[in-house]
Length: 177
Image: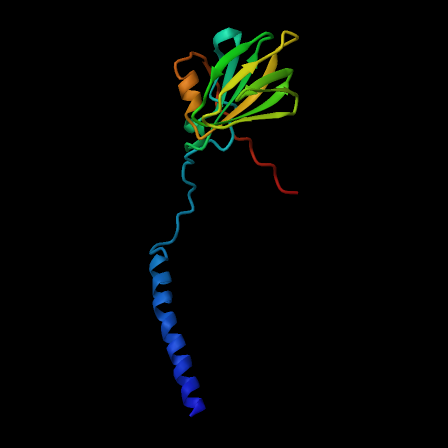
């Protein structure tokens, strides 16, 4: 009796695997996969998109990453140099704004609280926060700014003229030793 129940149980378990195996088999490709690489939908490496973009107040921008070379709407990235004495009035963004200070001193006031950032520090502004950007008169500040999701670069710089950046070319792979 026990042998018969075990046999029925094992048979039932094996039969329950049949639909799963059939489903997996239906996902298998019917022909051999292509070995030719497909064209990427994004740039594997980039030197940016547009540079020497003159902004207001004497700022200079370089558009590094946007949907055109990222292949998606995840983020925009710019490098900007703000001259000494720059004050950008209170405003909001639709995206998260992450500001990394590359050089100089940069101040930002978020929701009424002032922060002074120097090289290597990060400022964060969330959508809906009220922010002002300032650079002391002692010298310029160079920043890396990331907006996520994308859209802020187009909104702020879409109309601006600049010099297109030449795309990077792949280098030949080194021979294996």
